[in-house]
Image 1 (cartoon, one colour):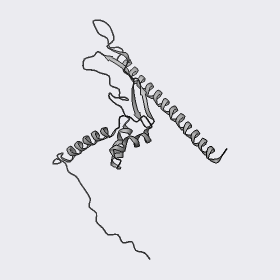
Image 2 (tube, helix red, strand yellow):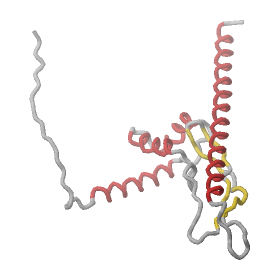
Image 3 (tube, helix red, strand yellow):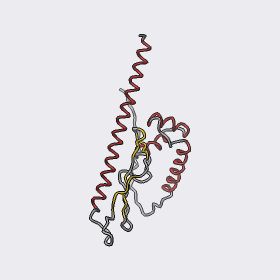
Image 4 (tube, one colour):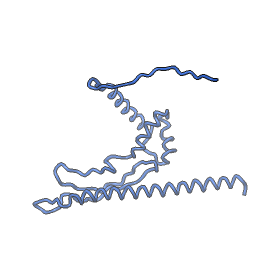
Length: 185
């Protein structure tokens, strides 16, 4: 066996073990997230177990199957999750998960990664490639057009922030001025 074939075999083994490790971590994260959401729903239903409709005697807060599976983008890659449903018949009340809010598609760390990459100078056309390198092959939904839309939102938020009224606020600031000489002996 030549030196090149040994090095190629070693790189392939490292890549396969890295992929296996990533799969194990992703599956563990999926199980933990699923268990946490299930526990949150069970706690909510148990807290309201004593509430019943006076006419029918049926409970007002019950589980009601599962929502359609969705994926959450994370640093480990896409994590599929099936969120349980809660049927809350009380007036003006609705169950909302604190762990997995509605319409959440990315973890907060990924949401923070997008503007950071943009501020570091990554071109909007280079985002899919950069995110594939960071998040893996399944980094979908973060195309150049998505980043451009986010950039427009950030610009509007900055304009609103810059135009806010500061007349009722007082700020203290320090101004320091000095000269530093680097004297060599």
